[in-house]
Image (tube, rainbow, N blue to C red; front, top):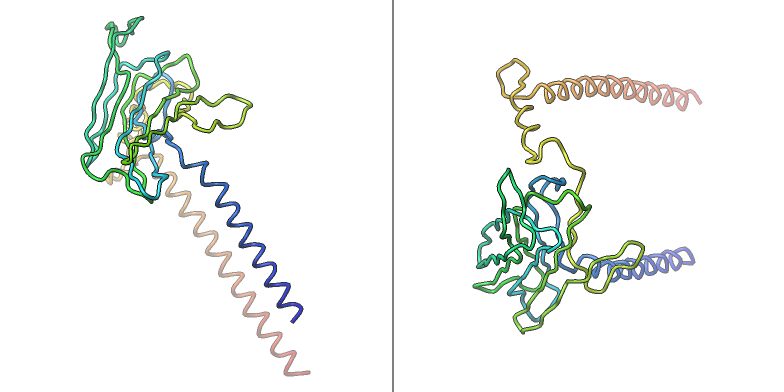
Length: 249
């Protein structure tokens, strides 16, 4: 009885702790955020997703406005169509023109706005809004996007506070895109193309690297298989000997 009571108390304490952890973790991912599809290298091009969760139980998200950082303008900004949403791209003149592939650009996208033509992001769901960006700045480690989320009841939430190093996360943090180190291939495709052209000579379209990786995996699998058989045999032998000892006794 005493053991049963102790077990019940432990289970109850675990449930309470789990609920507390869940409650504390919800705000951490409830705001608008941005993540690259793959890598986002300095000086390169990337597709990034703005993830918009719905925090309300009685309203849907019907509008998202993303403002691009004015201190690091991007020459190319292209939204991917999102079913059920209309998109508007806003441009403005640059105070300092950009030079891209030897061509000067004096106008850049400053804002992208998605507006739902249906129910929008309903309670309990999230939506991703992809953007193709490039060339990414080379003189910073991150890009801060200010986002404004509007609900069907006309509530507006401004995710515009830039996180500060060494300080707690702000109440309404802006989406932050972390940039990785620059690569030789700013478009991020040359390495993959070169690899795809180097086959293993068998005509099956695999890359040489993939063939080597597969060979290594096969060898490892064989070794593990032999070890497993040996261990199994030892276990059977042990069982037989143990049975004979019990019979003799």
